[in-house]
Amino acid sequence: MPKTHFKYFSLLLLLLIIGCAKRGSITGGDKDTIAPVLKSSLPKNFSTNFNGKEIKLVFDEYVKLKNANKQLIISPPMKYQPEILPYTASKTLTIKIKDTLQPNTTYSFNFGQSIEDNNEANPYSQFKYVFSTGSYIDSLALNVRIKDALEKKTDNFVSVMLYEINEQFNDSTIYKETPRYITNTLDSLEVVKLENLKAGKYLLVAMKDNGNNKYNPKSDKIGFQKQYISIPNDTIFEIELFKEILPFKALKPSQAAKSRLLMGYEGQPKNAKVTVKNGSEIIPTLVTQMPKKDSLQIWFKPIKVDSLQVNVEKDSFKEDFIVKINAAKPDTLNISSDFAGSIPMRERFSISSSIPLVKFDKTKIRITNKDSVAVDFTTEYDDFNQKLYLDFKKEPLERYTIEAMPSALIDFYDMQNDTLSYKVNTKNLSDYGNLRVILENAKKFPIIVELTDKDGKVKYSEFTETAVINFDAIEPALYTLRIIYDDNKNKVWDTGSYLEKRQTEEVIYFPKEIDVRANWDVEQPFDLRSTK
Image (cartoon, rainbow, N blue to C red; front, top):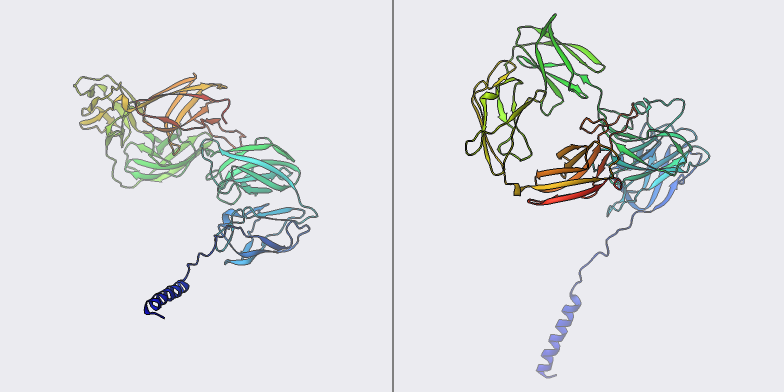
């Protein structure tokens, strides 16, 4: 063979060897997206005359439980929760029943999203194991829609319950006993189905509770159907959740300063009558709200005593407390503005005081604009929240100086202010937007119209008896619009009461966010008849 041909032949052979020796990459195939499959169960699903203490579930692959304490719903509820083994991945789950089962009862174990395959966490969604301790499986069902009575977003993991109306049932049952049937909205459901029910008469209740399936008004939200319902029933019932206002209750006061007590409370504290006594002598007092706490501040005139008697009365609550008085530092008067720099056009200028104010000398208070021209104003004092409002007409692109001379303000202990001076300015009207809301097909008045931010906080509110509401000079933002039918005309939304069988005042949301931009005028019709 010629040398040239041999050289090319050797090169070709080398390339062929390298190509054969090159390794390919391993892809591992497509990702597993298939949920586990139940191969068998012992006893079989939907068994009757069940009297065992153990259930075995056999799957086609290794599975594990995730958040079973939240996801697993057992109906009727069991006093002692079953144990599910093993705690590691396995093809077989064993349910060990710890409770005594009721006779002639259909039980349902809804695992929600808690059963997953071990490798890719594909859930066996809404798997149910059902058995009956009687001779047949109850097969009736009821559909329920859950929403919040006030907020646009509804809580997750809301329990939906049926209490059987029998000789043992009364209004206190939901506080003491678990329901006959239960299901849960878990983390996403708006409409739930109560299944495997028997025919009968029931109270329908929804609760956002702590997981014990009993109503605790201090911590739980509740919703209920006022009239008992009969099963079977094809109606889709709607339940609105609300937080009850507890009956007023005062807790034992404690000393907070030399002449000030702090008293915790439950319920609504305003207008509670508080009397402080030294023997038969009544000590002059004032009662105010402790900012951001469920506590009242009881201010009393300085007196040298070892203890004081505090009598508290409101509605049906009445109690006497004895409070020990020790040496303590007195409160000092501090006064501060609630605004720094800019003040919105719609807001009233206000100042807060550390001690309640009792006297105001308007002649010693002065408001001037940037040209040093005096601005007329009125005053209003919120004694419960210790706020003094100075209300004056604000002009755009203006600067205001608010001054208070010494002794313009006098507090409960006869202390006076030093010279006070605050400066605030306003923005241009073009920095704000205007929104006109036109209510259509309102079924009654008065109505509270509210604009809330993305977190549900009320930014602007108007009480109206007419169909047109103007929100002028509001901050540019995306707003949620809602109306409240103010049945008792008290200008606030009123919650419900389970024992009084009273539902909340009706709230209706506009279905879309409203975009208010700077220097824009927005007109928004709101048809209340077509909105749920």
